[in-house]
Amino acid sequence: MGEINSAENSIRDCVVDGNILPLTSTCNTRCVFCSHRFNPPEVRVYRIPPRTLASIKNALPFIDPARPIVIGESVTRIIEGEPFTHPEIAGILRLLRSAFPRTPVRLTTNGILLDEDMAHLLRRLGNITLNLSLNCMGERNRNFLLGDNQAGAAVNSVKLLKKYGIPFHGSVVAMPHLTGWDDLENTIRYLSWHEAETLRVFEPGFSRFAPPELQFSRTLRAELESFISRLRRIINIPIISEPPFIGSLEAEVAGVIAGSPAAGAGLKPGDVITEVNGSGVNSRVQAFGRILKAANPEVAVKRGSEPPMAFCIRKGRGERSGLVMHYDLDPGLIDDMARVARRRRARTVLLLTSPLAAPVLRQGLERFWEEGADVETLEVENHFFGGSIRAAGLLTVGDMGDCLGKYLAASTTGKPDLVLLPGLAFDRTGSDLTATPYTRLEEEFGIPMEAI
Ligand code: SF4
Image (cartoon, rainbow, N blue to C red):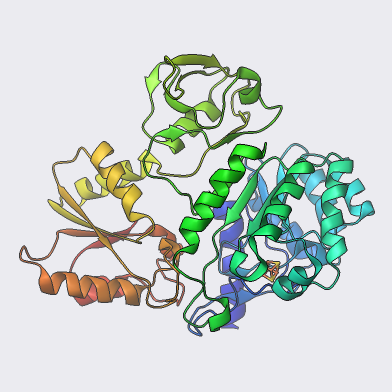
């Protein structure tokens, strides 16, 4: 009963917090890189059967019509499977469209079950954008990497999306050490030919539980970076790397969607946005957010060694500009941290974060931190998952406690007044992926803490 309630609570949290509508944990493939495989046994995630239409109807009042409805995205405790395996997917999409006639729907799929009838329905319902995780194209690679023995179906789904004019973004988990670089390049080119709006290339990750053949050398990231920069020069769609290769908070444009207001205005990949409507911008997230909110924003741009330029992006308030930028840092996060430090009257603040997020956070603190309190960042290694895992959202209370213990043992200045923890690692009850609350750390170390 406890498990069912926890799954129900997690489903409700998905809808309320993220406008994410979980449908089913069933999947029709078995990807070797699937984040649900090779987890430590203590990870508390929930597998759900296809949800009934009645339970989906019950969730509708919690959906925010002003934000896109997200389907098939695995970002929570619920193991999200392939939406098109749901026996009532057509009815669910019709239900959503009749309840929310103007709300965009974003659906992530592997494309295997996307046939002519479904493509027709998606076009008829309108305002549905797909994230198509194609991953690889070659028959042998699809079989080996994804456990997909009908390679033609997913590959054909890309043609159907183009034929029916359904907007889509392509994605691949780059496993060139297993599939070869040619298949990776062919897959990206294929998605580009069929007019994907953008393409996301994910660097794979492996935990300490992954078999040796799935592990890769630390040089893969650098190889991937040079592979992507070469492709950016010859392929006409914005390619986004996840996690991003970013060295600064400069608001650099990673790409511009063809036919978009930003493309019409003349913006190009590599441009650096320095001002929006006359006020300076300090990060990609800030520039992107201001442009999104504004009607016909005027942007000042630095383009290589050319003199400063100005463009007007003709679009409505809240309408997408078509600019594609990597996610770096929301200055609002630093404001929130400062607010907590003030409220707690802290003079020394220790910020725990992941090795992946630390460089950007340090730059953000240098740029935006205006409090009198001293703030220091502490990088927490992920020993719980181990392997190549470095994301803040996968840190656990155990790893944070070990790291903090060592830091305090070596500290010559004593305990900080406040410890800030990465909010991404905790659910709304303040518990990590193993259902351990961070209040345990407060009790153990006797320091006030907040997840932010
Ligand atoms: S399609 Fe997604 S959910 Fe299914 S096995 Fe692959 S990664 Fe996992």
